[in-house]
Image 1 (cartoon, one colour):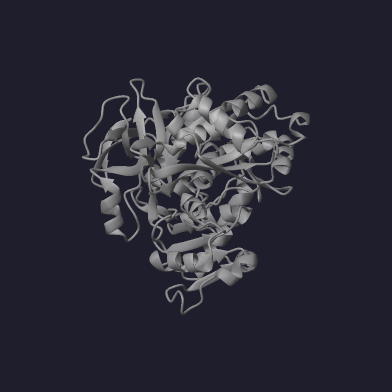
Image 2 (cartoon, rainbow, N blue to C red):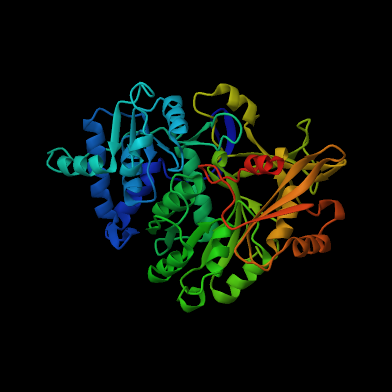
Length: 519
């Protein structure tokens, strides 16, 4: 590792790293062309076969007039075409803009226009959401997956199918991922080739991944976790990507056993849903060795149940964001159970500071806002200098998360600044209450928000997603009272039998929950 200057920042970088996003694929193709790269719904592609699809699409995009540096929106679900389109764009030096398929027409039109997209590739069944010419005047190409397949077949007849990869500056933008936009318009984080190269090495080293690993893409491919932690990382190590078109716990487990899945990265609720399946104990999941998770704590009972059911499985807590190109911290293998309240250590190239409201660094153990720097942190937001200036200071991304870092370097996340509850002058970190709720057996998801109160300012309201009837308000409050200070115990508890509301990027919408408490 050595210090280098990128984006006007001095960064600690890996000396040996992939020079571009496409180079991840090119290296694995060169090293083992006949190794299985993709598995989906019974179909399989080796790296050589995937390269043929990628080259066909790259030639097709080029013949349609798309060129290096232009943006192409990928409005695609979890399917092999996502991988082929992604690397075809990267081979041409274009900028991929993956968008979650839960996005609706107005939001999609905003993204297309904000990034000045030249083209969009989309699933056939999503055609009614694609902006027309008046709504997106700069959008030249609209290609459904059906047209994509026809174009690829037509291009095989062309004599010049061997397309040389574009020359890439590693500081250039490779992908734009739009952040959640829970308040105001979403911002397009610019993931550079340098950012992606460092993140895949962080995952490779932390999880000890290699070409024999088989990873399940069960989260959206368009999300930073799917794109970087799974697609980019597995291609980097030359492993196999098992594409899961739609997550249904029982079917996922059967697929994991059948495909000998060794690596996953999912949210805790997905692991808990797996444990609730009757077929869990009947399947051979002995190949499953690494289970990464993030976005919420993993309840101790879930950790214990998974350890008993799959002895070879090591659960690993991670913390990151779109702006950090996925991982900013990773728990060392085997330590998640010992430090269940921590999201791990900063990744090797990260520098994490804890700051107060005045921007002053705090001592170990003190709580404040996490400022994150490093070679995996994006340089800013696409065509949005105001948001970039607000979100980044002195080369650090201001996360908006409240947390601490102890003397060992272990990072803890307490809450989002905007989600902290003030009850009669007492500050309550919603994450602490949510952790207590998640420790109740049968709780799949839990969220806590503040409800306005004329006397105390705010009161604690909890929302619980469960499929069990025996959990009631009294048992929830009694459990919390045994683990929390009295003023932190939820005063109202609402049960739902469906997942809690999330935006197209999968982030919990506490704004929606707050509106429910006010109805």
